[in-house]
Length: 633
Image 1 (cartoon, helix red, strand yellow):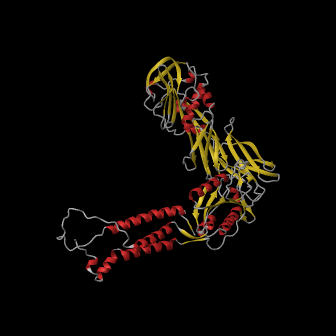
Image 2 (cartoon, one colour; image 1 turned 90 degrees about the vertical axis):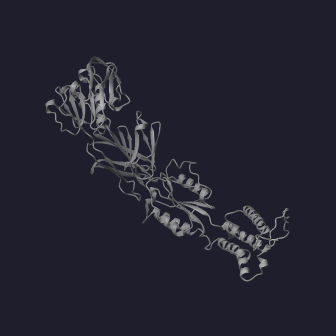
Image 3 (tube, one colour; image 1 turned 135 degrees about the vertical axis):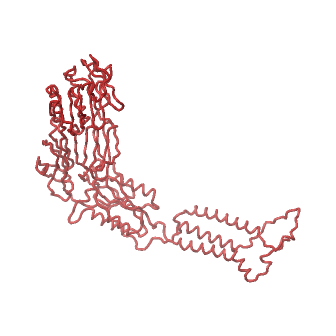
C-alpha cells in the first residue's frame, strides 16, 4: 500500500492536527451542557459563582472514538491510499509524432505517417492501462493534440488524426516542450517517445545541438533514401531593364548516389528555360536565367516526379504585370518637357496642346504647363507656373530673382533632392492651406506645394526648364518623386520567392525606414516581425502567401514549398524500439472510494447514536424527564 497524494510525514501531521482539534471540540461541547427547565421562578441570584471542576474522564468515549476513526478513513481517502506497489503505479508519457513534410513520403503502398501512427498505437497498447499519455505533434512548432489522458479511445483518436505538415522539423523544440510538460503536469513522469523519420536541418544536427533527456525513447520510421527536390525559386525585376525578370532556381540531392535531373520552367504554360542539374550526394546547386515580359502570369518550375516524395518537385509563383502610368502633358512647348518625362521609367507620356484639354480624363496623371483649365482635372495633376489668379493654391505674391534653398527631404516628394541656391528668375509664392505639404521653399516663402487627397495635386510656382534647374539632376528627380507619390505602383519593385514555412529572414535596403515596414498575410492580417540592423525576421507555421511592404519595395513569399530535413538524426545511448508488453492487470488499485464511504457512514452513525436524534428517540419512548429536564437548583 502507498499514498498517492500525500507522503507519510504529511499524512501523520495532518492527522495529528485534525485529531487534536476534534478532541478539544469534544471536551468543550461536553463540559457545558444545556438543560431545559419548566420555569425560572426558583432561580436565585448567588453572590459567588459556582466552581467548575475539570472532568477526569470522558462521558462519551465511544462517540469520540467513532469520530476519530471516521476522520482517519476520510483522510486516507483524501491521500488516495492504493493497494499495490508504488514502483508499478501509472506513469505519464509524452508521445511525440513527427509531422514534418517528409512524413508524406511513400515507402511501398503506405506513407511514412501511416507507419508512424501504427507504431504509436503499438506503443500505447504496450503500456499499462493506468498509464497516461500526451500526444505531441512535432513540426516547426510543438503542438499538443491531447493532454495527459488514460482513455485509450481518446489517445487512439489523437493519433489517427495526425497528418504531415508543411514546415520542417524542430526536434529540439519538441523535446524541450515535452520535458516542460512532464515537469509541470505529470504526476509520475514516464518516457518521452519520438516516432518518426527524424530528418532535421543540418544546423540542428551539429554536434551538441540536440540533447535528448535520460528518459528518451526513439522509434525510427525508415523512409526512402534517394530524393532530389527544389529548395528555392526567387524572381525579381532586372535593374537594367524593368521589363525583364531575373529567375534564381536551386535544387538539392538528399540521397547517397549522384543524380542527373532535368528542370523545366514555364510561364503562362509555355517553357521559358530548361536546365539539367548534375547533383552529387548531399549537394545543392543553383541556376539563373532571364526572360522578358510585361504581362502577368504564373511562373512554374518543375522537376520530374521520379521518387517517392513529390511535394517539392513543383513550385509556382504569380508574376504581376508591369504597371504603366499614362501621363497627359498639355503644353504649348512640349519639346521642353519631353526629355524629362521620357526619362522616367514606368510611365507613358502623351503630349497635347492646351486647346485639347479633356476634363473627362479620370486615369493617369495630367500635367498643365503654364495654363489653367476651365475646370479642375478629375485625376491627379501637376501644375507648372499656373496663372496667379487661377492657381489651385492661392498665390500670395510674385517674387523676382528667387533662390530656392530648402527641400522637404524627409518626405517622398523631396527624397534625394539636395540642390541649394538655385536661381529662379521669377516665382509665385504660395499661401498653403492646413494639410498642404511644402515641398520646396525660398526665402520669400513656399514655391512648390503638394495637396494630398483624391485626387492629388502638386503646384510649382515656376517652370523648372526655364529656370536654373534646366541642367540640374534635381529636375528629373523631382518629377520622378511626384509621379512615384501619385502612382506608387508604377515604381514598386517586386521580389517573389517560393520557400518553406517557418522563420524567414529578409534583407532590407540601407535607406529603409523601419517605421514604414509592414508584414501581412494573404488576407491582410499583420504578422509580428523583428528588425535587427537591416535584417527583418518573421515566423509563420502555416503555408501561404506573406507580403513584406518596405516603402516602394514589395517582397512576396509563397511559403508553400516543403523542405525535408538535410540529415537523418541517429541518436546514441538511448532506448530504441517498442518496449515490452506490460501486464494485463492493473499494477495498483484505488480504494479511496470505499474509504470515503466508510468515513461518511461512521460520522452518520455518530450523529444518530450520540447526537440530537438520540435525545429525540429517548423522549419519544417515554424516558424519565430527569434524563432530559434538569432542575434549576
